[in-house]
Length: 376
Image (cartoon, rainbow, N blue to C red):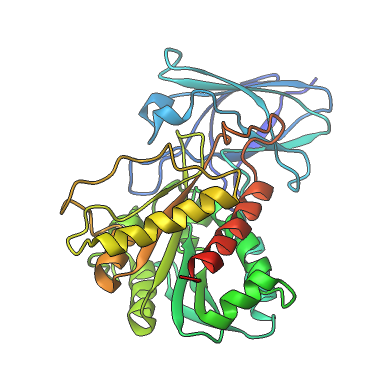
């Protein structure tokens, strides 16, 4: 058989080929531009049906989150529609940390990624479909460093300002799959939860805060190598126009409830991170966050509250992060949702692991929890 071919010169593509020998390849991941972050990969393999691939991604001890590689299974698709998982193994002692992916081609092509990608074209389709729904208004909040629109969908007749935003870290593509599920629900005139939310709230949805990083195949930064979720205290047009545009719009509307949607490389669970440690902390504000998490935990078998990040000591919150900044700035019940790159260990799926489909379902549970939270 002829040697395989590997390329990544497409939307969100990221891989560098070191060597190819028949159906075995040695690969490395390109770092984010002007940054040391790297972990996201997305590439295509062309070969012959029946070929047994061995793909070695090396040098991963220096990646952003080496703890994300043990027990991780790479995402794979033969048609770019359904994403399953390929047999993968981790060896920290091999070539500076190596993830070895083994997969038998069912056709002549297969795509591999750190998580199922969410392309800019699909993003545009999502925005177009949502903007065309009854009662939905489109806003361009501003532009990225490379001139891409920061898209926002606004809906609802109520007065309580709600903000949902995702993909500050572009490699966390499960966040925009979550957004697709949320927007499908919110734009459905027959959905009873959506009807309640739109009656009570004015909802602002930003499906992708970092379109430049998404297209470039970055893990965590924008086109200038800036981590947007460390810019919320003083965003600038030169470094982080994406955050500046979103925060300016929030200043106009106010924020009562906010969810920033992310993915976590190492923890095999869905969990929330709150605003412990903000200077203006009150027991009432903390109780609002706890009550929301309790409701979601009861509603969704895919969510839990036992595992997550450690709480921040009093007065030590990092106000450059969106959740802390919004809680401090507006007195908002703000939170960061983290979904796994691996799987939900409490409810595993050996075929897909955590997936686009499950991300979309969790969005529906999050919105149903919000509707219940509003009752108080």
